[in-house]
Image 1 (cartoon, rainbow, N blue to C red):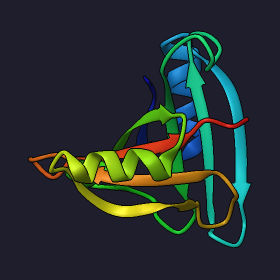
Image 2: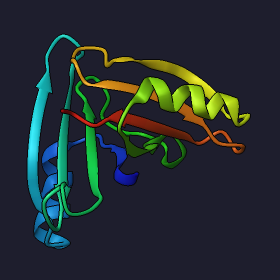
Image 3: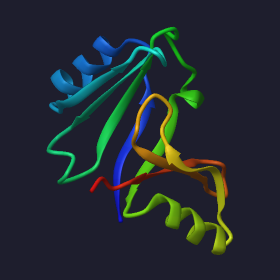
Length: 128
């Protein structure tokens, strides 16, 4: 297993991309619009996603700003099988808050678990 990305909600995607790429020197790795969900996901990092963790900047089209507390989204961990991982986590006393299945507006298999402090950890099933 490995950490994939950390998600941050941003109010102005252009401004955020400029900061992470121009100020911090990251590269925009990929960007996908989800018109039916009215959001865009942009991934930035210092190298390829296959080599290390990156940031996922989530822009909800109808939201222009967030309180700092609601800006944090989740930490993502790649797993070989999200369904099996959920069962293992529950067997170990962990709390699954979203069972494994395809993501809304997409096909990637994901699940969410919650740590003891309430932070969300996303499990993303590795693509074949």
